[in-house]
Length: 166
Image 1 (cartoon, rainbow, N blue to C red):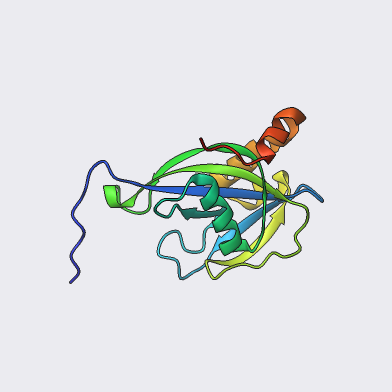
Image 2: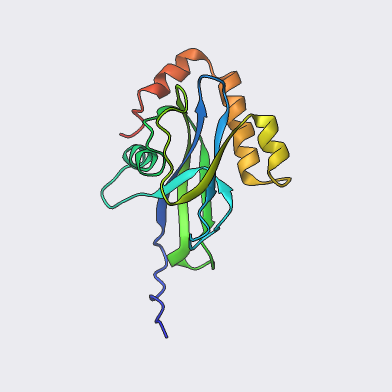
């Protein structure tokens, strides 16, 4: 029998998510969580990960991209924020995070870690047809497509610096 950690209200974990697309053809990278994962095994998602102590969101994003994908990415935009529980809704499972839209020139160099069992590059339309209706990832891909289409180049260049933290 394992003892659960005492609940500590007011504490939560911070995470980053990264929806990556190829600049060569505009397709988005969808990742399937490994069947051995403790949460959402086998589900399709973006890359993601928790911040480590003393780490900012941008540092975590770059580290997670290298750890999970072996890719250096260019930050294109902040797609949104998230709040959810990894399992039961108790403080120990509470997550808050920032989702980033990121790009790579092409898919060369992509190597999945053991956190993911497969990947697919898809257009917005392909992702919408592939994922169940209303799936959060389909909605995130559609939001990223809108950012790509509507964001002025001057604002895009500002994001490319990756200098969000102050």
